[in-house]
Image: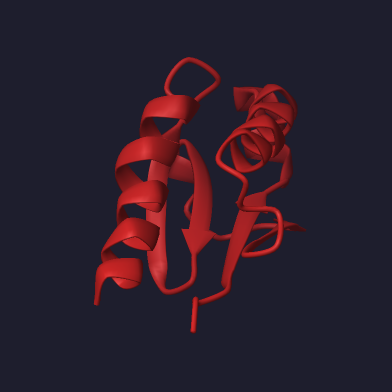
Length: 90
């Protein structure tokens, strides 16, 4: 059975100023591109209390920091997609 995941994206004021509203549509596109719509639930979170560490995401229990509009695709591939692939092979 394939695991379902929850991806929370900080939408607080500090992340807003760092470009979260450019990150959000890119994450939506990546989830669709890799056909993960049925497995990854993308949710906004008010504040994930890591403001000093750039835009923050929680992927299940993992904290992903220093996300930016420029590196969101790289973060998705290395921090999220690799975890999904690893779980699928287990």
